[in-house]
Structure formats: C-alpha cells, structure tokens
Length: 408
Image: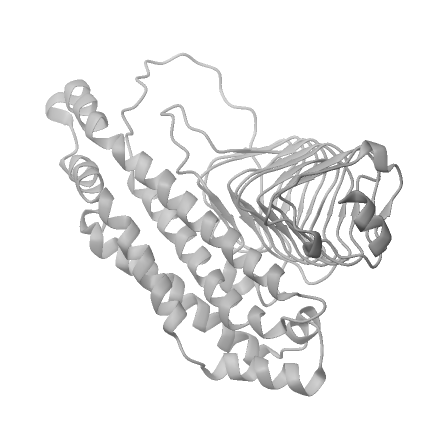
C-alpha cells in the first residue's frame, strides 16, 4: 500500500516508519498535496484523506475511521471517528475521539482532548483543554471567532455518575449563518454541564461557571467557592427539570443541524466537499445524536433508585412534583429513541422550502464555496434560514415535553 501511494504521488517522508492498515481503501487517500510524516499510522475502512492534507508535522499521527477534508493539518496525536472539514487544524498532542466534527477552519492548539464535540467554522481552542460533549459556534471569520482559552475544562461527568451533560455554547439556528457575536471562555476556567451559553458571552478567566447564560453580550465571572463540609448522598438528584430540558434543547439543535447538512450543505458536494466527506459528516452527526440519546437514557435509568433514596431522606418533606418527574422520566425512557427517529425521518422527507431554494439559486449564480455563499446572505435571508431551523429545534423540544408532561 505505501509503495502504491508513493507512486500515486503521496509524499511519505520516511516510508519505513509509516503504517497503513490492510482495511484502508487505496482510493480513499488522494495524492495531490498530501503529506504523511514520520511515524504516522492510518487505519479503518472508512478513513478518507482528501487533497492537501498534512499528517504528523509536529509529531506522529494515528487516525482511525476519520474523514479528513481538503487542506486539513493534523499535526500530532490520536484521531478516531471524527470529521475535519476544509482548512481545519489540530496541534501536537490532540486526542480527538468519536462524534467530533471540526467545520471549516476550526482549530485546536496543542494537547486538547475532544469527544462528542462539534466546532463550527472558525472556532478556536487554545492548549491544555478538555472539551468533550460540547457544541460551540459564534463569530464571522478567522479574525472574529469564538475561542476557548488555555487550561479550560468542560465538566461532563457528575457525582451521580451520569453524562447527560452536553453544553450548548451558541446554537445551530444562529451559528450556521456565521453572523453571530463570538463567545469567549476565559482560560484556567471551566463550565459545568449541561449549560447553555448565549452569543456575545465572555466568561472571565479563572471562572468555574455552573449556570445558563441566556442573555447575549454579557461578561460573567465567578469567584472562588466558599469552603465547607455538608452532608451529601450520591444519586439523589434534587432537581431533574433543568438537566432534562437542556438535553432536549441540545438534541433539538443537533437534529436541526442534520436538516442543515442534508438540505443545505449537500448542495455544495464537489471537489472541495466530496460526496464521501458529506456522507461521513452525516454519519458522525447521527452518531453524536444517538450518543446524546444513550446518555439521557442512562440518566433516566438512575431515577427509579434516585426516587427511593429521595423519599427515604426527605420523608414527608419530599417534593411531589420532583417525584412525579423522576417516575415519568424512568417509566417512558424507552420511548425517546422513537421520538428522535420520527423527527429525523421527517427531515429526510422534507421537500424544498424558500430558504433551501434560495441557497440553490445563490450557489448556481455565484459558483461560490459553502462559506462564500453563507457569508453573502443578507439579514432577511439569514432570518428566514434561522427561523426554519428554530422551528425544527422547537418541534423536537415540544415532542419531548409531550412525552414527559410533568416537566411542564
């Protein structure tokens, strides 16, 4: 395989040090401008490497079943079941795992861990960051982009041992238009999921933030927590409504993103966005959606035992509303999958609408790239597209609230 790739035109600087698995398909590695440096390893029948990709410039790279778009630079680290669209970059020491999507020109510096993370165009993460189970958007260009400062953590695992904790930093209906104010998460800080953060938010460096920030254009900050020691019982869950609703809204945004991919991005399939890359993008997003369903199901599974613990501890003071919410979430947990599948099927069956037709018209008249066309939309056109996607988000949330009416 390595000799064949070299003859094809792939630059492999130290062939004896490079390993390519028997399951890798020869035709899914392009030749033009592709460079594979010393010590790299490539595995997986789904792996796709497009023109202009550079692997391992700073340190060896291992990739497995990744879809690597044109002119992407993966400079060192481990990458599995992830998608990188045109111009994305990852620095030395990256650990990028399943369900992760880098859209155009998104980037991370050195030593960053990601899993089930979606970064919209231009979003930039500094160094020494753990940012799993997040969606982040905001900004308009490489010069005006959302950013996460170095030494930042998204806390995605609770003392109750669940991970129904994904945080929505920005949103899909606004973020796809590439016209929203950037979000800044200051370094040496953290976000305790699940949170929702509005566009224009600046969280000051050093803050551990635990709340939703739904008002845009705010500077928020937290001081050091007051010390103390209080009784605590793992597994009780003294509130479930906020966690459930934030999960519904997060899922609604991912479902809206699927509509965007299938009806808008699909129109740009071509040399800069090959069909195999598009299908990889859809597959990884679907993986991300059902990971969130799985994590929410696991959260609901815990609520039967949680209700019993709560009753014993609270006695006559137990909240009837909280107990009803726990009982309902547990009892109907098996129905969540079918709600999501139904909404995804509705998206597949959707015909054209005014916005989808508008994108097609602009694409054909300008022959522009995806970024060119989206950035060329005027305010009225952007609002039409955002409203369409917001209806999808709201529809999914309404369906989930109908399934769990005790949440109000």
